[in-house]
Length: 228
Image (tube, rainbow, N blue to C red; front, side, top):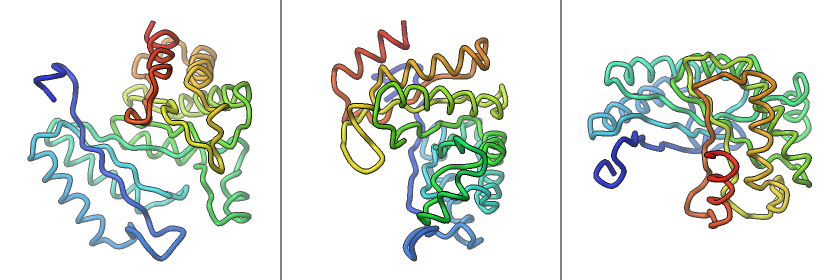
């Protein structure tokens, strides 16, 4: 990677399913599980990676065991002069919406804005999974992303890199309409949220999910609407 892309920081993407909504998966409430994750991270960094990105789902708002894990992981990454990065759930579009949705569906999906801030203060980089939003139209999706961008900016420290996810995939399923969740709509929303909330922020960008499903049109929209 360093030979082909000089100057690019190479992070290991570590993801797994949590046993929060089914009996299967990682149980962060088990101290031994958290210790094993920390041990694995040390091995990843010793192998030469310059950071670790964690995508643990579904992670419910207010999970104190996750915060404990991040504190321990950050101590390890700082000692290696490496980055700690996480994928983050979306933020409540309405106050306490995650509680309502969790009661109705057993899948809270969103985090409270306060919990998002607690996570953001414990990492070097946080990437919002701003897709799978259930929005049926590009205009509604763009407005939703603008709101998510503003909510995240309000509670993310200036020292933490904040990235907003772009939907580089084209599935049609519950929660995701490919015709609505497009790269141009997402970028418009990100730009609007940034300009009205913290226009001069420097540690900010977009995260492209996921490159192997992207089309040339996705890359063109990214280059023309965001990079330029």
